[in-house]
Length: 592
Image 1 (cartoon, rainbow, N blue to C red):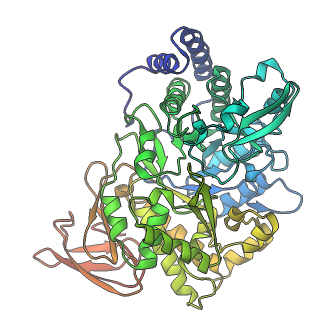
Image 2: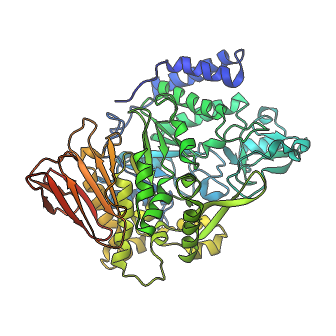
Image 3: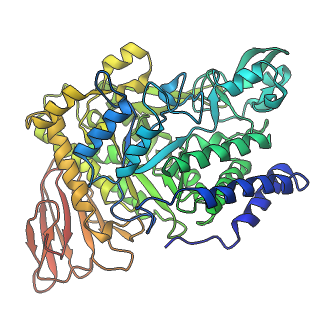
């Protein structure tokens, strides 16, 4: 069961507001926030059927765009709902709908209106229909808002109500060293000149000139954002993703990343939701090194309940491309969360690229460079960020995860490529946490280089949209890549959800058996029903022996959940397994 904070949400709200805005302003702000939260709690609809236990082994989230599947004459959200109901309902329990609001750029992440569904995609009823069959996850893109938004247009018009909604930097500061420490996720200008009714201003733009950063030093911004989050909950969101949250608070002269004020805002949002909708889960998206990433758990009861497992994609890619899981195993052995109410959101691919910064300090520079070179050799691209000294360094790899593992022009048998890919996904499915499966991974997509040529944006390579009349035949064709990936992947998910050992908070223990084997012992939260996960990350067969009693398997034989095969346990407890190249074994005493 979730662990409650030692202090009440009200006391936490008061403390955070006093820190952010001063003791004099805090009481009035607290009264407004608590009024919103309490009123919402009294009048909101009851939570959906997935909240009796907040997260279980049943939870798997599909990450998809609202217009991922289209057909002529129909709102894409309606088409998506039908496709999800047809193919994955009953196996996948959650759907992360990437931003479906009116947007001016960045494939939805430059939001013009937080409260609307883009009419080209559908309406709120279409979103809520998906919520009838799946647990919904929404994006809160609250670091910035579109330059075309009403908020920013009113700022340009010098409307006094919006004069402090954005961060204005005086020209003198723009050329000083005060901004030299700012950590940048992009190789674009930090400040953008705009013409307002009162003259030219320089506004803060962390990501692009079309994405204007909001000024949380102005409390009205925070209040508007809380209202937005409550709207999302009203529309069915049970998980809210705080996009680019690490950059939220700016203070000239600092790095402007992970500031204490940013953590306080996240904690304040958590406290407000603990009053208004305690079933809702906050997840922070911070594509940074591991120690910085997990700081958003707070003390385990006062900040995010989930954080993205950002080191996992590059480490898994390194393990399989080298045939050596040693670095992955060493990292996984050190994983922990601060409480039973927190867990990781495990993923290998997303709408963005494969971030390499999270692997800093885990992989060597030479190993990182090898991933870069492999990406380019396999037809992908490399994106860079600007460092404080003005230099650039690699930020992410832009390529589909399938192609990152297997060269599309390499001539390998498709069956081998699929086995390699599914082995990577099984690593993610085996780890403690909630799996997040990107739609292009589930449906077996390769890189879309033609899309990059059309948009000029490297991330488009992993954002191709499906036509419904093309998707259905591909899934029905046993020889197609989509069919060969989709059905075995779905079967892995189905079998995973039957085992209590894969509970997000079930203990895990990494076994150092052989460099080519990633071996993980999972057990249920009560310590029972163990599953021994063995994944061969190499292209060679491996043979390994275990003391079955040491891994809590004491029967006369064990069964592989994946294939149904059985392995005898010798009277002395010796368990010997032969693991084929890229084979996945989930061994348990329970017959399947």
